[in-house]
Image (cartoon, rainbow, N blue to C red; front, side, top):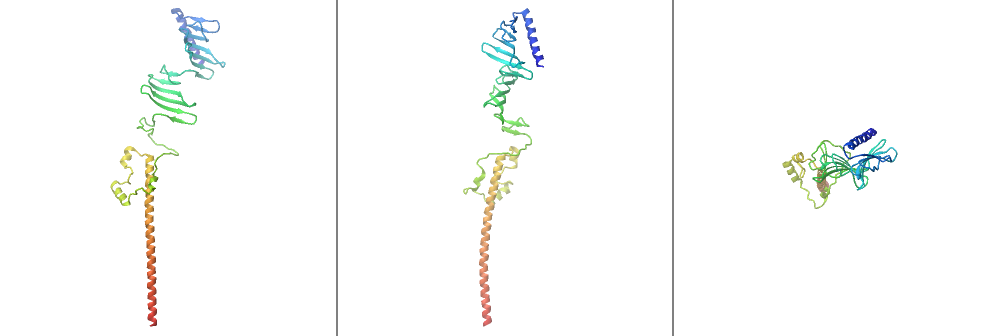
Amino acid sequence: MKKIYLSLMITVAFTYSSYAQWVGNVNINNTNTGNVGIGTTTPMQKLSVSNNGAEGLEVYLGSPVGLVGLQSYNRVTNTYSRMQFDASNFTFSKGNVGIGTSNPMQKFAVSNNEAEGLEIYLGSPVGVVGLQSFNRAANVYSKMQFVASNFAFTSGNVGIGTTDTKGYAFAVNGDAVANSVTVKMYPWADYVFDKSYHLMPLAEVKSYIAVNSRLPEMPSEKEIAEKGLNLGDINKLLTKKVEELTLYLIEKDTKIKEMEQKQQMETQKQNEINQNLQKQLTDLQNHLIKG
């Protein structure tokens, strides 16, 4: 297929040049060295098409054997842009490739108006390959980068199942599953165990629940319905409530133990009193019997 395509380009070039030889000032020149020039008397490759000798289009044979190339050139600035064909590959060896644009800024660019489009680029460090959408008028870029072990979005927001991320870096409209999710939060709720922390009395907690139908600081059903639930914040808040509950239990346990200890002491005291009364009663009975 590539040979047919290349042959077709050459045939079109010869047809155009033959027509131009009779109706214009462009001639076909054979240097008898194996090179053919159209519009130039000094073709540097097998087929060279030029309008001024300094710049144009060439068909060349390369290395290794079997390589055929098509290159545009400007010998004044010593710049070349090449397409190469061999038995199994079709490559661009220099320059950038543009579709819908005559001024590609990256290795591969697709655009409909020069100002916005999609590009493939090579980044830094070595090995980074990126895909970016762009709007040069607004100087806005959204990038995806690939390296050997990572796939990263370096700018913009990511939406799955939605085009409106609501300003979030990552938005999913649908269900998601994961083996593990790590949320970094600072500070954590361990300040509850600080001696200076004020623990709301249970009577106040009871009054708050009676009025609001939820624990203090917890979001309401309406707030969650409107704004959603922040997993980091809610886990921190739940941890705080568990720690407060632990303090309540410790406090109650301490009071219960104090009451048990007090009751035990009173029971022991009462037993001693009963023993003394029993002894006195026994002594009195013995005295009456002897009397």
